[in-house]
Each structure stands twice: as C-alpha cells, then as structure tokens.
Amino acid sequence: MADPWLHIVGIGEDGMDGLLPATRAVVEAAEVIVGGDRHHKLSDAVCAERVAWPSPFDALIGLLDGMRGRRVVVLATGDPLWFSVGARIGRAIDPGEIVYHPQIGAFQLAAARMGWSMADLETLTVHGRPVEQMIAFIQPDVRLLVLTTGAETPGQIAKFLSERGFGGSKMTVLAAMGGADEARFDGIAESWDHVVPAFNTLAVECVAAPDAALLPRVPGLADELFSHDGTMTKQEVRAATLAKLMPMRGALLWDIGTGCGSVAVEWMRGARYARAIGIEPRADRRAMAAANALALGVPKLQLIEGQVPEALTGLESPDAVFIGGGLSRETFEATWHALRPLGRMVCNAVTLESEALLLELHKEHGGQLVKLSITRAEAIGPRTGWRPLMPVTQWSLVKR
Image (cartoon, rainbow, N blue to C red; front, top):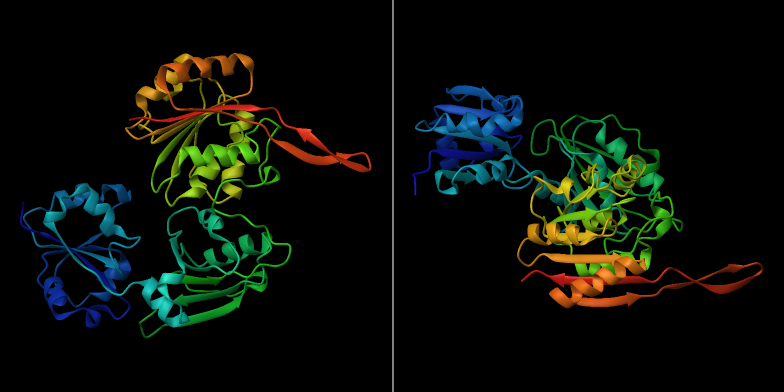
C-alpha cells in the first residue's frame, strides 16, 4: 500500500485556530492547498501554492492525481466524509494514500444549537442538488437538518412545506456557525420572509395541519397523488410489487414500460439513494413520470425513450427489474441476463397472452406466481358497491 500523500482536512468558521495541533501542523507543512475561496480565506496565513476547485468539479481527481509526490492538503467544510468531497475522492484514489482530518460539521453544530439529538433526526443535503429531493422527508413531527444550496433555499423549502399542509413547521437558518459572524433566523414556513446568508444550514421541525398530505416512505401511495392517464400500477398492486422488488440503499431499478413512473418513484422513495431508470416509448407518459418524480421528491429519476430490449444497451446492470409493460420473452431474457446476482425480478400481467408467457417462464425458472384481485368500494348512485379492478398476474423471483 502506498504511503499517504494526500490530507483531506475539515475546517470550520474558526479557521486554523479550530484545528487540532497535529492537523494544524499538516496544513502548515503543505506544499499545495486545494479548496474553495472560503477555505483559502480561513487558512490565508499558511504559505503554500493555492489551487481553487476546478471547473467542472469532476476534474478534481485528475487534478489531484497530477500532484502525486507533493504534500497536498484538500480543505473541506466540517467532516470531509459527511456529504462532502472526501467520499468522492476516496472512491477514486486508494484510501491508503489518504489521511482524513475531520472537524465538527454543520450537522453537529446545528443539532447543538437546536438542542436536538442527532439520533432522532434526518440529515440531508440539497447543496448543488435538486432542492425537491427533500420533499420525500416531509412527515409529521420529523426533524430535519438540511445543508442548503444558497440564500434562496430556505424560501423554496418553506414553499414545499406550505403546499403540502406543513405551513406551521418551525424553521431555523443557522449561518457561520462557530465563527465571529454566526447568525440565527427563526420563523414559520407559511410566513417565512427572512433574507439569509448564502452559506447556511436549515433546521426544520415538521408540523402537520389536519389536512396535510401524508406521504409515507413505505410503498402504496394513493393513486391520486400521481398524474396519470389511467394506465398505471394501482396502489394495492404497487405496494405488493415494491415489496417483491425490495428497495435498498443505493440500488438501481430498471422500470420497463414505466408509464407515469409510479413504481420507479416509490422505489426511489423507499430507500436512501435508491436509483431508477424508466424506459418508456411515449413522450406524454415520460412527461408525466418526470412531473411525478419532481412532485414526490425524487427528481433524479432517469427516463429513457425507446423500446426494449434495444433501449437497454449500455445501461448499468440493475439490482432489480420491474416489467409492467412491453413484456415479451426477448425482454425477459435481456433483463434477466443483465440483472446482478441476488437481483429481484417482478413481472405484472393483465392480458391472457402475457399471463400465458408468465406461466411458461415460471415453469422454466421457478419463482413465485400469484394472482392479485382488488375490489374497491365505490359510489353507485346514492349507494355504495364493490367495483373490481382488472386482476393482475404477478411473477417474482430472485437471481441466485
């Protein structure tokens, strides 16, 4: 294993004075210091070659690789491995060549300022990412700590809260924590009007009104929460489908014939950092899927135009596959071949022809075959009666 040559140092608003003596010595001995303008100002007493974050930021790894053999320090805010640059560098450079020097981060400082237990809240970042992804975390009585993108982010989040019946939620913006210019701004989502510094951390205590939208992370959201044209995996069937697909942290789903995206959206909501690629030939349905993903807090849903299996060429191998439309033997074979070991496959069929194919595939590959019949109570004139939905044949199996 190579000797460490790269030090990734967390630094706070108190600058060099806040570093441990050993960490301070590392920064003072650096030949090159890489960081943002703010980081360079916090360490401006150190004499070293200064390098700004590259543009595009993805060029950072190549930049660092070119510095091998020198004493290099990368400055980051707080804990470099918590929603920060350290994890990105560690995925590309041998961890044995890196020494991490964590500092107390924004989450710990914010929790201390609020008097909140870190074990009892959700931490997330929208810094440089779509702000809409925080929507999936809006639930009654939940406490959130959010790393923001800029001065406008708290106002955007206040709008999301108010639109969903959480306008009474308490919001606190904390800026420059630990520094001489530390500031705090308190308010309520529905009346939020503070002008805050660009670099801030937001604390939210979610308070639900009686008519608030309840959007749990477990699958089975109400059908009316999705924009759709009537062709969709209905609520009860969708819940059963997601249970078999088993969303997991960071896992990738291929949603074949994604339609309005209901399964892909719930997959991404079901586990932290779960990803999904929806393949859908119709532009109107891709537009609905994109709108649903944005409204329900998973804006990173990837949508691809095309027919299967041709559209699958070059895609990252999935951890799960759902075939809700476009079922054929050719599609099954292509997706089954691409599926990773321990990957989950679920196919739903409503036509007799598709059901016949599932029977054949079940005989050949095993798995579980079930018939899902859902009947809902609906108004029939002034009275109420049972109205059946089309029965769904569902075949599921795990790749061993």
